[in-house]
Image (cartoon, helix red, strand yellow):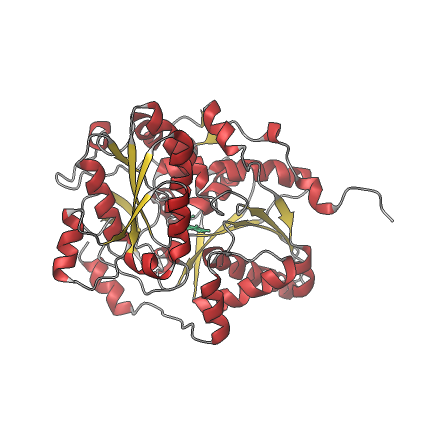
Length: 453
Ligand SMILES: *Cc1c(COP(=O)(O)O)cnc(C)c1O
């Protein structure tokens, strides 16, 4: 019998090895930055335009060309509550697939909120606190972002106001409970608290809400109060950068495991967990040192990269946010009620979109039942029950591994297990009960919405 440490422990980092800088991919892009535009004037926005919504440090990060930005000590301290996160090899899944591929995953479900989202929530709460903000407003779909921000604002002594998409507020009460435990105030959106919310309710009294509507409410809340700023859990450059702690840890852990990925996979809603894992590896590809592939996986109910248009669009339904160039289904798009709430967004991070356009990132879309087939196969081999969002990445990983078996290749695959699914068990129930359906978007709907851009 071997006396060496069990395989999984070889890839661990100790807390001293947690990265102390974020990686800013903007420093390495082989194309010029693409400015965001003012929603009224359509001219490139400046720092002052964003100042009512964000603290200056985050505005600077948004446009920074510095390759590395130091993570402040108090942020590192808070991240150390659960970081570094484990990197694991999915040997039992490999065996079940009888594949020649090697499959590794970075597990972000160990955070208090159960996903990667606290990585940026902590940083955003810190920079707001440092500049005197008293209260943060935000939106949440299924509740993962709201719970992450509630956890983070509580650590730094800020109030937190969450506009939660009404259908989730009613159907997914446990994320709301978590937010309340961490001291946040949660209201269903559309609400009566904002002009944006009232307007939707006047036209559609039974509106079950959408992420785009909730964003309009949260932005209006912050823009109309001096003590409040706005916080976004994905899409923006600074959010993606805060997530690069994932990929930097994974680089060290993969080195320790004696393996480097041939393909890096992640699910994409706004693009932050995918980018967080991928960008530190993409740095080496941009600098010509590797040929690693990068695969972004989206639901076919919100296929912004695979079927949307690359164009300037608003981030919200109410046309209050800056216009950003991204893959979009149109800001009027309201996705079907699929179970991966975190992936139901009409747009995509501008950085991810630009890298897709330049051929560095590939994308694929899947319907939800085949995604849950993959989730259950993963849970039955590796144990961990993945979030429905994450299960999209797992579907693509399994398909890559099966392809490898056919071509006789033996790639190393790395994916981001962005969160656990322990608060999403109703979705698994629906899958087993056979009541889950696949809801692809009609082509005509996409064409109509993007034609208006
Ligand atoms: C929110 C969420 C996502 C999608 O958001 P990204 O910004 O694309 O990462 C994916 N997985 C989990 C577990 C989430 O909570």
